[in-house]
Length: 240
Image (cartoon, rainbow, N blue to C red; front, side):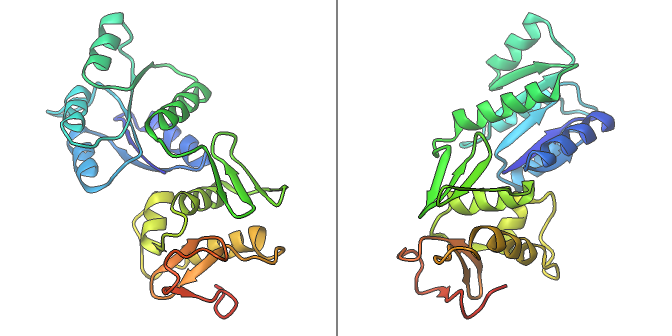
């Protein structure tokens, strides 16, 4: 999942980005309202964390109004030093989904973020492909009842693939949803992490779930899945 943090104080922005990335999310950071709107128009974010007091002509509440004017907009968590009842009410009435006052504890922010994602996302919090299960809330993975430990980026890739079971995903799509970066066609970062995932969830099991899709990228599906079967390359012939 990809978040946008709109915060002009670099120390706070860096703190949020590091914490959220450590929790397995990709993060973009905008330091003013103009840049935030450019990002929002260019990228479909899963959540926006928004400061109210921003430098320049566009403040946080104006950014919020622009987001809410879109047909489909992400959940918005306001993070502000303005903590009066009137400030909180105004932010919520303008369309914010939650309001957290600075200073804050990161564990509380992370809990609120996960609550917003559960509220705004009808997708199940327990994903399953064949005998592989992923608990999005507890961030646990099991295959055939056996627990599997994944690093945050590995978990992020696997969750993204399982939410798109049977759908071929390009390397660009995977990078833009999991990493805080644009895809560089020369990098093999996706291939490296797919190799790591395969070693943990496929290599020791007879059924291989992560498939290589020739000319596109990767997808996850049960061995007898019918999705995009004409595009699939037999994983035993071409492992990355």
